[in-house]
Image (cartoon, rainbow, N blue to C red; front, side, top):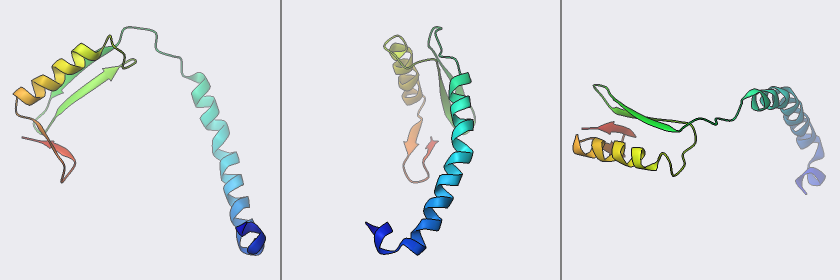
Length: 92
């Protein structure tokens, strides 16, 4: 509707958006097609650093990985890590 009301202002914008999409879309499609799906076992590992505890999930987050993820979360709570909602980082 707005394109009909203000065509001279919006047509260049839509052309720029379409050109940008044409530039980025092929590379995104190639990247998606070249990535193979992960068929191995899912693993959950946690690493303590001085400032935070990092939890890494490799593979798909399925029921197979749920107990290990729950254990990592419980371990972080036992160690005193908590989520700081103000600075959006983990803090002790």
